[in-house]
Image (cartoon, rainbow, N blue to C red; front, side, top):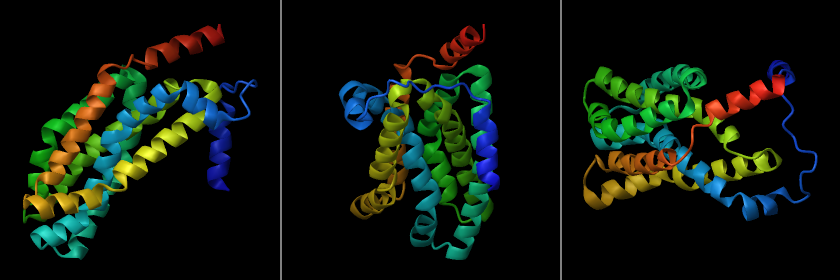
Length: 232
């Protein structure tokens, strides 16, 4: 009830963005007319999707199997890092509202590419404090990206198909690439013998996200101008 009340409170202050001429088959229309946007959404969320599953879901198994860290310790560190994620995600959204979406998203994706291996080396250390610092670094990266992503996906999607386009593109990407990340990491380590291969995989995803963002216009100023026009 409390969550529903908060949702109603925040929604009541938003502009109505529904086009009442919305087609009867939004899924079909979305694939016919908005497939480029769906691919763009997939690229934008690729790094955060794989990074989250790799560094906050698979990491406990990674620590236990590859470095002999007790599962209880791995879970405690992971829980603390995810608590930090709860702080950095809204921070990412707040910053994107002030300096724009692309600067925050590019900082996160480029930071992930540069820092993935150093952070993974810290995670593979035998000192719990260094393990936590490694995961904390990923919490900052994934949090900033996730916080800015929410508004960005809305702003790049046309209103008549917005719910369909975002839900399909985001969830399919999350399931195919994020959900399989632990399995891919396990396979990579088993076939290469290199415990850093999960980091290389995340780096590839960071490149995809960075390239997607590089060819995307800044959406925040456009949305800001639109809001000013509506109010005037």
